[in-house]
Image (tube, rainbow, N blue to C red):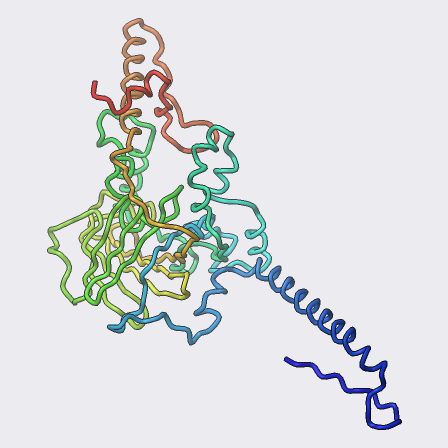
Length: 400
């Protein structure tokens, strides 16, 4: 924009006063500096305000209700990309009672969350001593998230944000799961979870926040959608051609999925699941049906809404939501879990050593030694597992 300064009329002819011409340059500079100060102040104020704006309010679809995801040449919305659940860390699955039926934090509550310090993996990192910190350092740059959301819980239905009551069968299944999750004994590999054994985390477990690797890569074609999970290396191929699910007698860890489009939303229905994994970290029956809804709400955000329907486990269906996001420089990498799974061997060896101490105590008529408990600090890990000594560590991966 060009700024004109009107010459000063001295009343003696039409020319400007000589002093007026000399004053115009510093005056113009002063005006420019003033406007620069005003603009920079406004930018700083807006930046400070943005620090306390929940990330869901910054999504393109929230800012502009007319925003739509771009389309492929064949017309389907573009969902492709790599998304993680890193920014969902610190949000509970079930809504704390203090929030009642509110899905979102108030501005004051959100400010407290945004300024409350690290949660999840970030908190774990900051609590480590130098030696443990070094072991985690490779994960720091990609696993701590980059946004803060204002959700009070993952669960959005029922209205109170909590899982419905369990059926009698569901209660028995829950109790059995807790018994299996106790601190051993571990006599064979089947005494460990499917996660420990590098088999699968299941459909929802593969994307719920954990310590690391909570990412999915979506690839689309006109007839299928492929979803690859970083941890534990599962890939689902979801047909869009209207075919029926697999035969009801076939049950798989990731089930049988079929998909279709409802406007901008990809709807995926999954049945034929086994009862050996979990949904939302809770056990379920073989009758479970999952209905997943994927919708792009921003170039860097994907709403992921899952309805859980298992009448043998819960008295009514329930629904939870994650907003999956991109992270700077994040790639889905190979998850060489079996190749690097020293945990099972070490834990089985620790179990064997403990049982030998028990047998020795019995033979001598001495008290049975206490079973190692979970590590101090409330980590909830397996107490029987302790890092091997230097001599033992040299044996890992070597046939005896």
